[in-house]
Amino acid sequence: MTEPSRLLTGENEPMSEVPTLMAVHAHPDDESSSTGGILARYADEGVRTVVVTCTNGEYGDAPGGIKPGAKGHDPEVVARIRRGELERACALLGVYRVELLDYHDSGMADWEYRTSTDAFCNVPIGEAASRLVRLFEKYRSDVVVTYADDAGYDHPDHVHTTRVTMAAIERSEIPKKAYWSVIRASSFARFRELLVERGVEIDFPQPNPEIVRRMRELEERITTTIDVSRFVERKRAALQLHASQIEESFFAKLPADAFRTIFADEDYIRVHDTTGAVVPESDLFDGMR
Image (cartoon, rainbow, N blue to C red):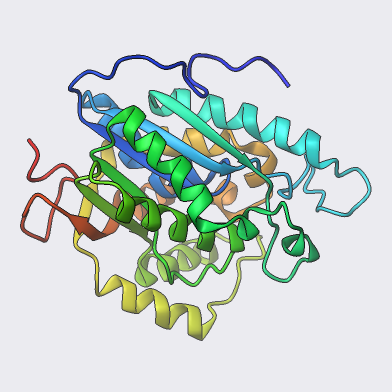
């Protein structure tokens, strides 16, 4: 593995009074797909942006779409590739620092890898939350963003990331606000419609009624919508840097103008607040500046 750059797992250094946004994610590439817009926007506004990645992503695809367990899939090689992609994507998004918790990917909910004792989903919540609290202290994280707890995407690492992040917030007085990222059910449906309209040949999943129901319920709870239209191209470019995971996906097949249509805004549910800022919001830092 190559030596970490300044971007990755930074050395201890005194923190100035610059506001800090911390995005806590499960795997390399999640930071670009769900929060790439806010990371780029707030970095440009002078906010210190920090990405925490809980797992190494060993059970993502190997180049060429090779799945875990198949010939040609080496988990250590995949983790190394994904770490490099993460660093390049975060550099493009203007991220100040990436912190790697270095836990082992759990794989999907129906894969046997998730039963391993070293899988992230089996790490005690308190243990991982304590590490995250130390990062809150290191960076003086004002705003923390992670996933919705019932977004329909039941990946064990995503579920555990949310639980760990919320446990850390309960233990710390540092974060002033916390948010869950949300994809609107209406945006999901429009995404599929655009692919069909453009004649994109891709196996885009049919909507699962239960997932759609859960997404609609979350959509009704949205408190905060951030305009990231000026940063959509950077978000798309950052996502494309995760080529090992998305080059065969519908993300890669969606034309640029259609991508802009879907991702001009990013939506969030505020789940923790000490500022008293009123909702709805158009700025994660409402009440702080």
